[in-house]
Every structure is written in structure tokens, then in C-alpha cells.
Image (tube, rainbow, N blue to C red; front, side, top):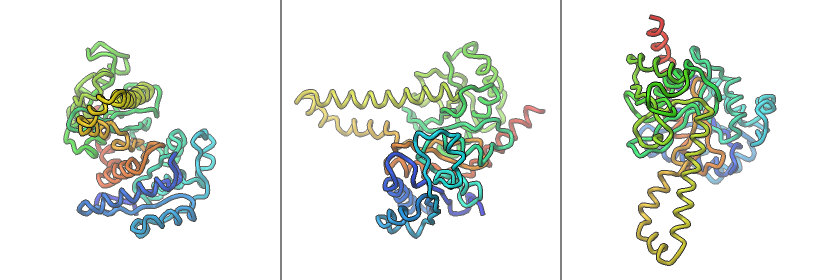
Amino acid sequence: MTDSPGNVPRIAVDAMGGDEGLAVMLAGVARARRRAAEAQGGEIRFLLVGDEAAIRAGLSAHPNLERHSEIVHAPDVIAGDEKPSQAIRRARTTSMGVAIDCVKQGRAGAAVSSGNTGALMAMAKLSLRTMPGIDRPALAALLPTLGDNDVVMLDLGANTECDAKNLMQFAVMGAAYARTTLDLASPRVALLNIGSEDQKGTGEIRDAAGALRAATHLPMTFTGFVEGDRLSRGEHDVIVCDGFSGNIALKTAEGTARFVGDLLKRAFTSSVRSKLGFLISRPATELLRDHLDPNNHNGAVFLGLNGLVLKSHGSANELGVATAIGNAVKMVRADLARRIAEDLGNFDARAAA
């Protein structure tokens, strides 16, 4: 039986994926379980997918996790540099492919992997297929802002070229994701553009804006265009773009965050006076570090598939893995796929009328 909001969520975890290895993946799963246990009605069940002997040995460090988990054996692992076309041919024996198949078979409500992004996307799309009414799936993630909540951004690399219909569908999916993850009744949705004026941008972007302005019946508020320098201001809840632009924007934002962190570290260690200054300002710098830490915003999801698959950062630590699993649990409990299907059905019905 598949997961539903009223059942205990079951999450399939690719225990062998990621740069940091099995130990970090299991530590992250254990942390996610502890977080859930501290929340009222927060039980989670896990399918730990990978080499059975290695997983069983690793569980000795997490005795409380073992009774909440089932091991699903998969003898092979997808390499970080493996081509998606090669990975697909080995899907049935790899930890990544078997985790996705657990979702397809209804054994899990979502799959989480820190492995090869291209392989994960290709396997998920081939196995789960796109939802009715969706032309292309999109990769969505949460980014930190100066506002009261994070911002959902999509597409972050699944589709390099998109037409107006694709962008409209991304907006509907992103809004459903924001309502689920950020608990927003009517998320503010904007299109990434080179200017905020109506005449700016490509024809695809302007056509998508026209369709979204007319979609007043959907549970979202279209706010127009947003430029790249306003992404983190907290003025929007969902930012929509093609995967080429989105991936560049994401990598630029991550690089800027690392640049600021390294610059502060260099400044605070340049002299005895600056070191004293660091001690005084340490609470503020710790807050900044936590806010920019990608492990606190981990877990990009492929929206538009007949099932939930989340991509964790390959370099995610224990906290990052737990964050990705926590996001997966929220989506399962909220029945995100059903919400997306309903919103798309309402949009298409109004457009046809």
C-alpha cells in the first residue's frame, strides 16, 4: 500500500550514494528519525537500500534506527562520473535504481539519494514517468532569503530550454510545493527575467506571464518578473525559470555564499585586533553561517513525476541528509503529487473554458 497523509511515511534512502559514504548517510537517517520522534505523531519508516552486509554493520552505531528500518539489498552503486545512459542499463541492481523502484512499487512514498544527479534524473523519469498534463519534470529546491521563509526555485537544471507552457506548469508545481513545504496559502510566484518591465525578456517568458496573470482561480499570486539580484530579498515565494538560467543562478548564489564566508574568515584572522573583533561579533557570524549553510536547505525534488524523488547534495553532512529526508516526509504527508495534479486540472479546465 502506498503512503498517504494518514499513514506513517516510508522513505527509501539510497544508502550508498553521496561523496561522504555510508556512515554519513546512516547518521543523517538516524538524525531525521530523532527529529521526527521529538515531534508529535512524527514516526517515520525507512527502506535502507544498498549492500546489505555493509548497511547491517553500519546500523550497529545506530541501534534505535534498526527497528524503524528495513534493508533492501542492492549490490551495485552508480559512480559519481557515470553517464546517465550507462546508469540506466544497470538500474535494477543499483542502490539508486532500487530506491526509485520502491517508490514505483508503492513500498515507499519518496526516495532520497545523494548520488549522481544526471543518473538520478534519468532513472526517475524513465521509471516513474511524468504526471498527466506535465510535459517535463522540473528540479526544485529551497534557497535562503532575507524574508520570513525560504524561496522555492525551479527549474534548476532538468530542462535547458523551455516554452511558455513549460514555465506555466513549473509555476503551478512550484506553488503547490511552496504550499506544502512552507505552509503558505497563496504563494507569491515570479518569473526570472532580465528586467521587471512587462516588455522585457523572451517571447516564451512574456507568454507565460500572460497565462499566469489570468490564472486568478489558482491558490497562488503572480507577482510578475524578478531580476537575479532580487532572488534572496524575500519578496517572492516561488521563482520560475528554465533549467539553464536556474542552474547558473543557483551555482552563482552558492559561490557567492562561499565567497562571503571565506572573505569573513580571512578578515577575522588577519590581525590580533580582527581576532578580538571576531570574538565580539561571533553570535552574528554564527547566525550568518547557519543561514547560508546549504545543509539547512538541502533536498531538491523532481516535480511532475508519478512519485517523489529528492536529490541531496553529494557533499551533504549528517544535518544535510536529515534535512532532505525531513522535506521528503513533508511532501509525503501533504500528498504533494495529488495537489499538483489538482492545480493543473483546474488550470487546464479554466483555460479550455
